[in-house]
Length: 247
Image (cartoon, rainbow, N blue to C red; front, side):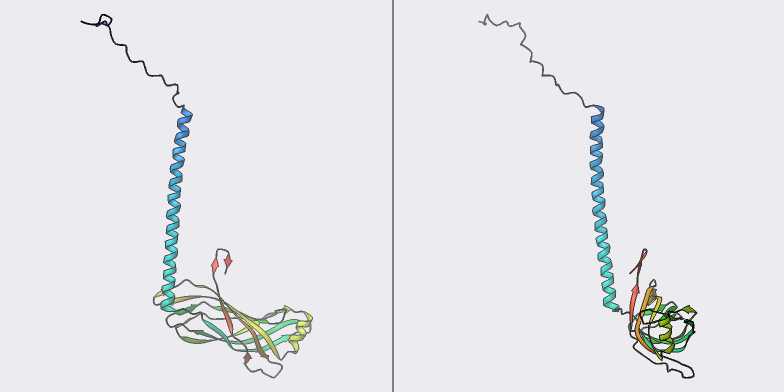
């Protein structure tokens, strides 16, 4: 028999409803902030990737350049040109009673040597100044040599005459120059030169040549000084320009 306490027609109790969420939907500002955060993170990732690629590319370029330079030096073994003063003679040096340098004439011969086996030097005109080696550094003459092409393993003699215009001298300087039978001078040369390797020509760069401590004879009156000098080894410096600076 059925249990009289249980009503067969009664419905089972339904499950209790789930608890309602007390959280509120995100506001518009919260959604925008989340979008901006995601966008910023994405941009930072792109920037990091770009920086990494740039650094890697730069490192590869530096490595490639170093390799090319190393191969060039190994194959051609380049050397700087060698300059020296073959002779220098002060043919005329006239000083007025008022202490002015009226006129000067200085004969200069320079030897240029290219020690390289495969490199050809291409020279622009070379300007030069003859300066007294005293503390005052009086410019006693200026001149220039013509530009030229110097083949590999060759030597060339350059000849020119330097001259000076009127300039005011100190009394002591004028007295020393007036009575001197020899003059200690420095010669400074400036030019631009490029290199030719086969059919390839490089861009020309500045060259500064300084020849110090040259003892030159001075002609006086009817006595003509011989075109000889002592000293004359020169230092060659490359003048590379980067922006506004010369190195």
